[in-house]
Image (cartoon, rainbow, N blue to C red):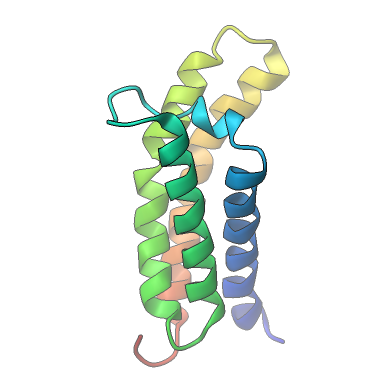
Amino acid sequence: MSRSERSPLLLAGLLAAAGVAHFAAPRPFDATIPSGLPGKPRTWTHASGAAELALAAGLALPRTRKAAALATAAFFVGVFPANVKMAADWRHRPAPQKAAAFGRLPLQVPLVLWARGVARNAQGRS
């Protein structure tokens, strides 16, 4: 299996693991939900976990890979406010936790670029 064939599957695995985590251990995700969103944080946690699982499935299938990769890039942009909230909330925590929270912010850029690259390299139409 070539690198270009592994890349979408690795991204799918990352999303699947994150999606499962939203259901298995939702409390940390609940805390990142911006307060301006309507409804309960758990609803948003479960919705984003379900979205991650759906995106992972779409990325895993060559037929839907391009559309799923573009949706994944948009998803990564869309969840950025939650990462900003986490960094703001954790700014007074011990250095390792603060570093993890602030370190997540620039990681969104390579994740978006990775998803766009998967879309660009997808064969055919989706």
